[in-house]
Image 1 (cartoon, rainbow, N blue to C red):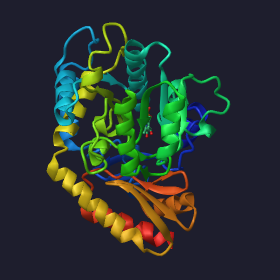
Image 2 (cartoon, protein in one colour):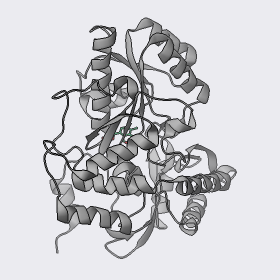
Image 3 (cartoon, helix red, strand yellow):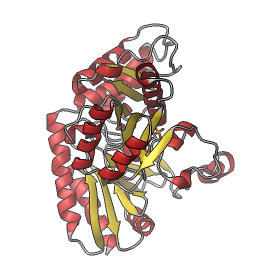
Length: 387
Ligand SMILES: Cc1ncc(COP(=O)(O)O)c(C=O)c1O
């Protein structure tokens, strides 16, 4: 029999430091390795499988579309993409959607929108996009440039120019950055995910919104990780009472298939015209059918459930032995443990719980519909191995 781990090691590029387990199937928030060992999945493929593994409704929507029409070029109209765009606009109040295949590409689209809008409205020398230190916006050369973490930049120079980084939650520094640059847009994550699951302070987000009016620049919110119910609201920015010009998302949107979206508000809805942007797979009918199923199920009942589960996790971990602090929002949770995060994740895995890390924290991104008893069991294991 072929050994998958050694085959992967031999033939797949060495970009992922994988755990030595081979996962073969799952259901909901449970996943099984090739020896039949059961794990509770507290990572959901880094916030992707919004309704868990092999969710029946999602799988039906996807397979029905796959047997009807799996792909046509964007030269023709198809139903799932149109209906998904409608649903996203209705749920956000924004106006138009460009579909991509990933979060990085959704951000690329937002960056192009900001540059074209600024060139047309503020002059061609206005192109600077301000992003935050410690942010993460993707792995393409442009979204790496947007990412405010130097260690991702090393050895990949030159990156796309036109980005400056300012510290999160520092209003004075933000004002100075905006004064010193000809700013087209400010782009940020409401909760920095890869940066360590850190929610922005409401005053800081309010200051961005006020400055955007005063200085006439766009607000781009990167909801690749925070979007689609993850924080207990439909999108993370809704916790802050602001109206962005562009919202980008991916991950949980597709529920397990690759789809991203740049959702554009009134100020920029017509910035992109024929030929300005495109993607062969963007809005692919199968991915869009799965995403439409996900989006239609993120209702107030589910969001309340996400918030309740979040409260449970925060309360349960707050004063536990070996836990220094808990951060994040909704079911996007960072845990600073006394022991190293990698050690806790490894010990939890041995006891049948799969967790993620983000910087020096253990990171949890379970499926939004994880059953309470499974969540409780996983948290008990994390507490036990953190002691
Ligand atoms: C906030 C944020 N933006 C962008 C990305 C990049 O998304 P993708 O890996 O789908 O390109 C990520 C991925 O972790 C992310 O968390």
